Amino acid sequence: MKPPTLVISINASWNIVNFRAGLIRGLREVGYRVVALAPRDAWSDRLAGLGVEFHPIEMDRKGLSPASDLRLLWRYRRALRRLRPDAFLGYTAKPNVWGSLAAQSLGIPVVNNVSGLGTAFIRGGWLGRLVAGLYRLAFRRSATVFFQNEDDRDLFVSRGIVAAGKARLLPGSGIDTDRFRPAPAAAAAADRPFAFLMIARLLRDKGVGEYVEAARRVRREAPDTRFRLLGFLDSDNRTAFSSAEVEAWVEDGLIDYLGPSDDVRPAIAESDCVVLPSYREGLPRTLLEAAAMGKPLIATDVPGCRQIVRHGVNGLLCRVRDPGSLAEAMLEMLRAPPGRRAGWGGSARAIVEAEYDERIVVGLYLAALDEALGRA
Image (cartoon, rainbow, N blue to C red; front, top):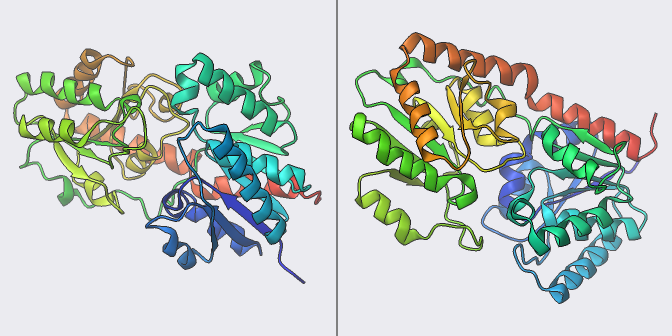
């Protein structure tokens, strides 16, 4: 019998490889043929290693041209008519909107994932209203819309963007707790300076500016402390920092810029605390990865971050857009006895194992797909 075909569409192949590999393995284990629709990038050739058929689709991820978006809708409809999948999984804004509308026009069941609200939605204004309207249109006939925290789900339901019966919670993209596990104690040797690490795209909305300013303040009291920053410069994003700004921070001795990485585990293992001062998140994978590796955390008290960081249990929360509050949390982390920090790291690992293991995510997706396809 022909295996059921599932199309996954995201705005970048690297997203599929880095964040959806566990889900893809779970889908293939139960017999799905998995096809990816995404723009071609440096990660596209790696999809074959996951057993995924890759079909490139041209997409302007950040563009606002109505003509360009209508062409994208046409490309989706043409590709889906050719592939004839049994279901469509959409992630990120444009696949969620235009991919879903194309699939629904062909009678293909749709399951969506809202992993974060994006800059336009967070900042509001006419663009935020436009994005909300497009989501409302696209999600009207979706079978299930997954959200990664209660705040995002409740916001979409209260604004009538998605029906309450379709909105469900998902514990992020899930973590492979065998791959991300505490490193040997030697990786965090006591004879080196204390090291903070932030892993994120270098965007203002991620709190990169607050991280740098907090580093400036903390170094006045603890000058040997290291502040590492790992992530790529997203020049297409309107809130991105420039390479010149990053180089200036490095020259001033404020941060150690590690650049992007295919594998964040070594950087996490060599850090003492992982920090994310974001303005808002869906469910930040970087914090989950750090927690799975037994690291204490610092994050802002905002949707997404506070789902993972429990103040005084596995780390510390600080106020959003407040470098002074972040610096205070960093100093508290620095001054905490090693045994307390180790306890926070152990609690972080236990929380991930109980709530965020990727097997939980796979099970929720399989149940949603069975429902969308009318299976018992």
